[in-house]
Image (cartoon, rainbow over all chains, first blue to last red; front, top):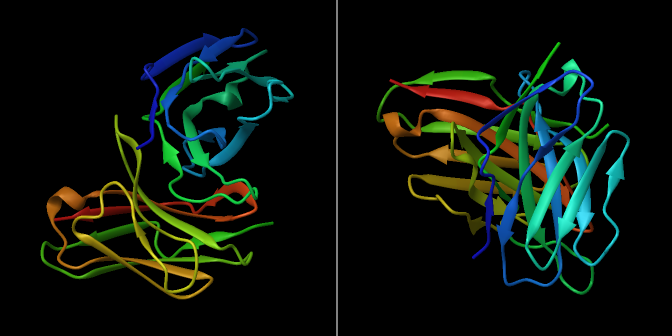
Length: 119
Length: 112
């Protein structure tokens, strides 16, 4: 069974500062993807960033970057230069894939972290 | 743009009613998922499907069933709605070769 744990129910940050959201996961799979999704008050889930487990280099998307520690099964999200529009709930998620690069099975989510950016 | 459409944004049903939540995607995705979202519990997987007429139980399938007669449509069925099924329901789809999941806007279901 696979699990995803986000231990921070709520976080807050001042505009323009940096914040890090934590995520740990547990799996026996060797090949998988990890994700951070954002859910703003509109409820529409949006993919923020994706990391392939076989890649050692941490993924980066503009102001968003991850710190992926495979041995520790840790996958944190860093948001730099926080903006008011970053206020949302953030979910960490996991899906395994096979040697052919095909995803299969459950797309599993954590409990979510509510991030509030203050002006 | 990929579009995942859920039939209702808000729904109020009575205890014991049979409830259908519909989800349609327009990008020929193989995978489709139904989740429920509750405060403090995140998104919990109810059922998923990787092909027409194929379905797999997720983590909390009790009280739910699903139907996938066509590739683009994945229906969640509450056979006899109960108050503990009051929740936000999210549908998602993805390609098997591309793991990004696209979500509908969610259905907030209230069972009274």
